[in-house]
Length: 183
Image (cartoon, rainbow, N blue to C red):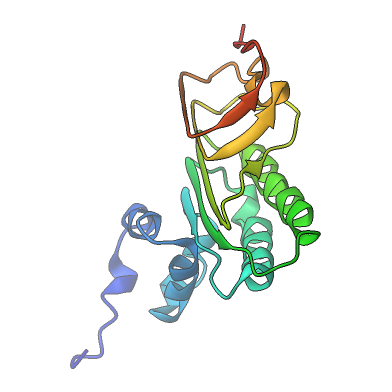
């Protein structure tokens, strides 16, 4: 700016968080270079959007791990969106390892008291993403959207999600004869 004034620092914290909520997580973290006041706002933004596998599977994994660990003071999440477009250039033995890691991200988002969780996985070559066969557990989760996942009965056990009001499943392969609703 010609005047040298830092107008970004004058924005309210809620406005900063709203702006960050519109960005993919990688870009939200990069905003720390915009102004001194933006340096740590990404750590407590109420919305996190993980998209793609920037830099490949092996670069994206540590990024997501680091971001979830760096959440300021265990700041709760209003919304967490995983939109994973994975081009598997890894061997078939790495797929289960990748699935374990991603399943741990879902559990960590739930521990951060996420209210809305969206998970979509597109794996090329066309493979279903396998969710762990155990129930999701959260007192805070109100909305869950699963796209292109595979699982067994545990995926449909919502008895540990008393606040869940909205469930959307699209292009999922879940092998179960019943869904267990919350009490």
